[in-house]
Amino acid sequence: MKLISFLITVYNLDMWLLERCIDSLLMQDIDETDFEIVMIDDGSDVSVESILQKYPNTAIRFYRQTNQGLGAARNKALSLAYGKYCFFVDGDDYLFANSLPSVVDCLRQDDPDILKTDFRNCYQKEPIQITFPALKYRKYLSGCDYIKSHYLTGGNWIIFRKELAEKHQLSYPEKVLHEDEEFIAKLFLFAETVIVSNRPVYAYYYRSESIVHHSSIKQEVKRLNDFLEITNRLLSFSKQYPLSNSQQEAIQRKIDFLGIDFLRKIMRTKTSEEYLKYYRPQLKQMNLYPPAYRSEGIKYHIFRIFVQSVSGRRILQLLDRYRTKKF
Image (cartoon, rainbow, N blue to C red; front, side, top):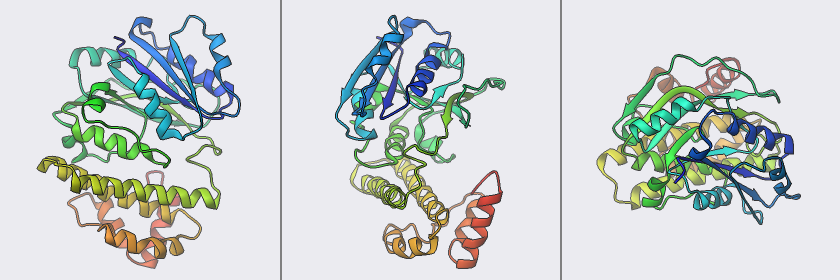
């Protein structure tokens, strides 16, 4: 069995992006017997299979399917993985050079269910070189402990035990955006050991034409609808699945913060008041508006109070534009 399966999903991606991604996986100074690469082409207009000719001696397994969306592509990749651990890397992102050896050592020594790494937003085409901070790890006895004390977001910069997903029959929701918010929340909900590292491993490449950053009105509405659907799916899950008290507390905190995120997304649109008027009844039905009172930090309480009035929302919008660290 391989230690890590790198799972790459691709759809209509420029070849240079995919090459950058694959090259970054091969520049990790870890033994080639420790990893494999599984690549899923989700029905690109032109198959990317030809890129395999540039890596004849690399353990890359390629699968092409009809276009079914990112969730389905990730589920397919997960089903094909042979590794003990899985690490999703989108084809337009990459890993920082030689960032994984210490992470691999941690996987071997501590055998966690989840190892959460750090990431950086990257805007330039050429892979950037970064200075790694002094390595630090923090261990949590459960994923619930982590959720109850941190803001858990969806994001690819986690390495998780495949058996954890299989045991609890976890999969990505399909045909919706923000699918990682649900999948990762459930992973943490069932994880018994979580280790968090400050090591920047994942380079998240910001490109305006990507699914996440597409700015048409149609895509804007779909992103909002899908985000609310994912939140509602987690809410239904919390009511229907037999969870412990600790798991209930953790998932409710996650849901509350998804509600905050949804309001932030609305306020970043040009017609935020119209959107809020439309979505407010649904948010109230889900007990997400007004935001729940929680014993969180001052930023949470400022947001909670200000978001309930037009003037307060305008102030929040100004702060969101001009502050580097946003609410």
